[in-house]
Amino acid sequence: MSKGTDETMTTSIPKEEITGRIEKLRSRLAAAGLDGALFHYGVDIFYFTGTRQNCVLWLPVTGTPVLLARKSFSRARQESLIEDVRPFPSSKDLPQIFGENAGKIGLTYDVLPVQHFNFYRSLLPHREFQDLSAINRDLRSVKSLWELDQMRMSGKLLADAFSRIPGLLRPGMRELDLAAEFEHLLRRAGIGGYLRIRGFNQEITGIAVAGGNAALAGCFDGPITGRGHWTAAPYGPSTDMICEGQPIMVDYGGFYNGYIVDMSRVFCFGRMDPELEHAFSASLAIQEWVRENLLPGRTCEEIFAGAARMAEDAGISANFMGHPGEPAKFVGHGVGLELDELPILAPKFKVPLQAGNVIAVEPKFLFPGKGAVGIENTFNVTEKGGELLTALPDDIVCL
Image (cartoon, rainbow, N blue to C red):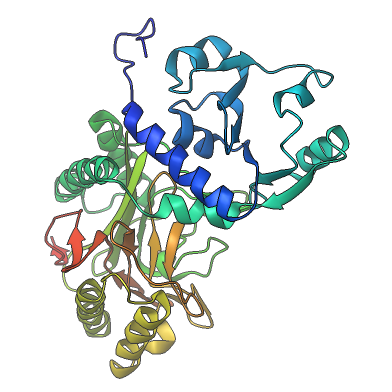
């Protein structure tokens, strides 16, 4: 692929990566009895082509993939590692793209709007559609060696940024001030900005929250949401002041070359409540146990169950993974091109781990009125347990 007019724009993905991904998908499509896959979602388009332009990708089991660009066609043609790139055709001409032999077409129902589905169903009345969401997400859950290198770099840069947080903290600053200074630091490091979430109706800012604000119930499907600034955006930091003795929870993702890692650390001016210190010690013990059990073949369900037992043994299971009575039902989540990838360390998730799964492990405890404590690091599943990608001391930093 040639460079664009901006000399900093270079090929993001080696061509052999794209080729390998397509061949793996084709094998899975054939096994499912599908004749091809039709992708609309931007992250999926990027994964299989190398461009994040507004496009639709037709990927047949046999034959040449076709990328149909809505906007920008010129950039899609420059960036794509799929050779056949065309402007998106008229509705009259679109059926010809699929040919006569594509009777069963896979779609990602998990992210495809009903309006789009109805468009293709009316345009291709004699074709059969089938959900390939599980195939697509499972394929993406196992990272290649190249992807792991991107995530190691993401982890290195994010951990370096976290190491600078003590220099940002000042008595009397607001949560929003801390968030602004840290996000400025992330942006200057080139790893701030996008945190893509696949889940419907899910959105989040970075978390830089203190005291009781960190222990509020919230709509985001995670243990900590924060108060936020408005009810229209009830996530993350508020304009409240950070006070002495409050645990300060900082939880951010890093984004390098499209790949996300996730981590959190706890800070405090002075000493915290002994109950919170006890909970933090339990978090570290749970994280270490989970790390040791991030082995191929171990099921996500049994790892969550082990973590939950440890919280119960510590006498604080009611506070585990969220506001009491409203916990997040996981202790770890896959990360990659999106913040909420597979696998999920959760009840009823019986899927065995595979080498190359990358999981953000985040045992946390919330105490209403007092605050939240815990830890989060990102690990690669290996035969020796979890490989740490966000290397930084886990200890609470007391100032």
